[in-house]
Length: 357
Figure 1 (tube, rainbow, N blue to C red):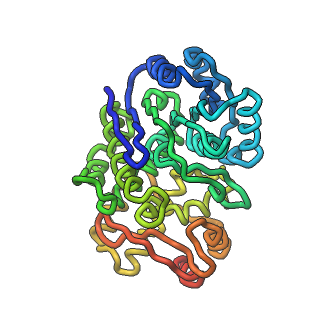
Figure 2 (cartoon, rainbow, N blue to C red):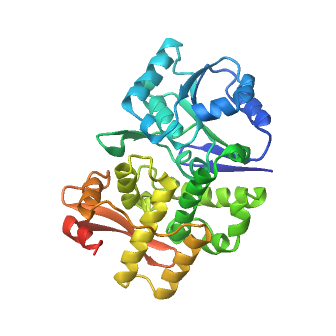
């Protein structure tokens, strides 16, 4: 099975397939045959698939330890040093093979090395497949803030192969489901050419998706990316519409920071952010009880539940104030106001604190 999507804003393709990984590596080798390659790869992925990388000739590797904490300025500089040491030129390429951490830091390095060279995304986690590998957001974490230093820089191509997921642990697969569920709540704002009925489809196909049935998995990845591509094509650099992709994320990023990127995966934190904002929207009569219950039921189908936190509201708000989309006096949230529809709101610090009451 093979599906090719196109991001028209920079005219690059996303290949979604379940071909063997060896076949994909040969395709990647052929696509970059005239370029020297620096492959930034997750340590876990490299150890699991070392033999598969033998097909990539004329390549140098930078092996990145796993975890959000590795997306830092020290590793960013090490990647640049590696690129320079192997004489990577403007006509060469950086290839990111791993999850979102690898894709973000490798993409940022590519965007700044020699003022920008080609890079290719090869996501190996479900979360990276449906989100971070597409759209051109690259970044590192600094100053106790996630993705605070970065750039908008589109990849040359994205190779998505669901066979990587066979060795993905259950918790990380669930994390990807958290990001998938986000799209169900924002579909009608995305401006895709026709309705995908993603909310309804995810409600019906939960068992198949949880069991990683290949056709369902590929279809859901395709649906999510069609929605994201539609948004990116309209608003590449998050001037307006693209902010809807941050549904659940303002609260999520605060949880990730307070949990030192260990207590919650990104997808887990996003789902808690969705629970949080759904509760607020219902309390403010922005959504009906029927939609509120349908939303709760959808999240529950994927084994998510709202949990209580030991962090004080004031600590959570302090982290939210460092969010890229916050300003001096207000914090930005994407909030539901109807089924599959969201909008941006800005709240003062006092108003945000009142959300916890």
